[in-house]
Amino acid sequence: MFEKENAIQSNVDYITKSYLRNVMQLAVFYTGADKIYAINISKIQTFLIKDAIEITKTPSADGLVVGIINLRGEMITVVSLDKWIGDEVDEDVYKIVIICNYNERKIGILVKDIIKIEEKNSSDLKLPSGNDPKISYVTDITLDNGENKLCIIFDAEKLLFDINMEGGEGTTIYDIENMSAMPPIYSDKLVLVAEDSKIVIEKLGEFFDSIEINYEIYENGELLLKRLEEIPPAHIGLIITDIEMPVKNGYQVIKSIKENPIYRDLPILSLTSMTNRGVNDKILKLGAVALINKTDLKTLYRYIKLYLEV
Image (cartoon, rainbow, N blue to C red; front, side, top):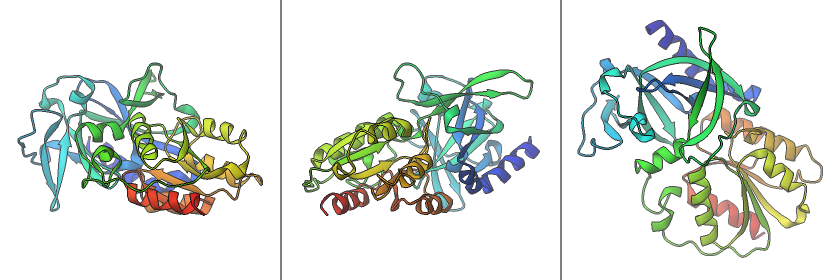
């Protein structure tokens, strides 16, 4: 058990190298109900043995929030993924707490056990049929016994929204309804966006409507690139792309545009919850102008205004 956790931790410490190969490293785990789920390892800060830490119950611990832990002086909310997906399990089945960093906000997720680290290309990630906002995409994994199983990569943005993990009022994508109105941006230019999270698509749409810009949002990079071929570059003011997406990821979007002499001068922003230095260095090297945290609406607004009102 501990040897496996140490091996996985070594992978976590090495995660910034995965972006060099345009692959996603997934930490695959069993939920308390023995379902197979996964999380992008670039979102993981560390793994903790549940029995070695103290989880303090909070007044809100009757819902998705289980309690809080003190990790070297930092108070981190621990949540139940099982309850979020609709399963009721005994907390005694959990062995691991995965400490995750999304949009510079840390949460702990209770899991039963870590299965393996799996590398996947963007083309290996499939959008599920239906419209479940809690699922980003699905993929296949092979267990140690050779059995192939379906694995779900959950939408962490939706989880954060549902457990009310937004930041200060008026600063994040999650509390767009309560934020102070930002002045409209006057431009006929079009903003093209690639984003796969349903909750982020919804909130970005509300934000763009509020500042009165022309925009189109596509659920993966390939759809954006196909749409781009239909539009004269003079009509486009800005391209915004997520990094972690199925079919074609954000790195591939940036690379494809910058290698095309017709569109290579278009400004590209990376809007992502993966804010580590390796990701930032890669998108700048590929030709994007900046990496922006998904919850940082004020910075996003400044860049939109800069490029659309030129």
